[in-house]
Length: 595
Image 1 (cartoon, rainbow, N blue to C red):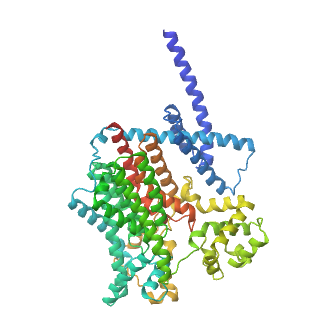
Image 2 (image 1 turned 90 degrees about the vertical axis):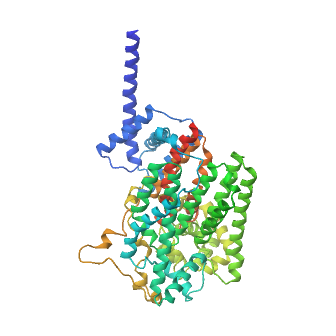
Image 3 (image 1 turned 180 degrees about the horizontal axis):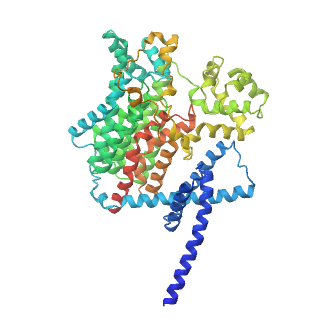
């Protein structure tokens, strides 16, 4: 018996030895393609994680798990290739072996996080989570937390009074003042909101008071929704996370920065966040809440703000509608109420297209067709600059859009603005020939698929790859918005913008303490955290919970279709707001599967 145990122990040790050697090799490949410096301590930490994962295999045979591992592998390779000018710089056999080992490491990374989520899901505290409670509970707590978040942000307002006003803001201000024609490139409802605030300031004899009024309203609105999330978590008895969320919302610098910024992204993003909590409660109630008129009204109001505060909002609602249809098919409880809700969403989408289409035309409100063709235009421009295969018909069309000699001068792989804002770019020609534009785009795609793929990847990869580490040090999210335009460009003089640092003194520099140049977590990392939570929900057969993430997923999808720039955190601001919701899903899965 002792000999048998000794033999088994020896086999175990030998197996562990070879597993460790294999993992050390995999870690080398992992560091290379994940673009991580080959530092000894990092090497052994990652090797330890991968070895632990190998010894605790979770659910590798799951189809969703396997597909996600392949997607992770592709996303890591894409970032690596772009950083290396689309070249592996190695023998084909070495490359194939590297890709196989990298795929194995992707399985192990996913496996590690699923194990981690499993540990979090089934701790004792999850038994106290109350999934029957919806809403926020005590209103006094909601008001107190709202005041706390607002108070922590207020020094930013005092430092940058009357608020941050950008190039985009000035276009809306000029439309509100009647200097420029109304244009839905800057959504009309948002511009009308600015107009109301400006009128208030002018009534008091100072337009800057109107800008300050806008900033205060926006700060209150955003802090209210973030306070709602904190109370929503507390009401479900997820106490620890609610406390951490309150601290996160109050002290993460990017939130007050956006709260005092005259950008549509703040209110748009918290409206999406609020809708996510409503969808979460809808799922937990198995559709029962759809019987409530108050609940439906909250949904409708948030959806209208989403649709009319950013032009991609209606497409996000379309993604939610499709997801709601799938959810209704999966869970047929309160079937009629869910169908009624889906029809309501379809009606709203139809109304939005009617209002922003025929009605805006009757009112002479212009639209910007270039915005939705941004990535397509980039692909066509790159075909010119890379001297791709272009026929006579395509060349003539491209020349009518923009003089052909200017493509080389204006094309930038990571932003479409130099092309679309150039004085020689013919927007009217594009608006009148949209079908022809699509036809030419498709013809060039058939002839130049490699150029199109490269152009697309360079425009989008930073939103969905987890290994663009420099984005964790991206400090120009706010300052990229042309903050000085109002002061330096004579064209904007009628806006009469005047900044005041109310906290200015001889003891400390408030602009350093309440800086506008603070880094944010890379979007790609948060996107992959969101995907990991979705995968875990799928493995645990809690697919319905994914519905609460869909609004955030919808923003990502619209960016991957028509982003105007390769990376700008403000476009995915909602994912930063959503982080506590993502985390809350993990213990809630544990509570649901054990109840």
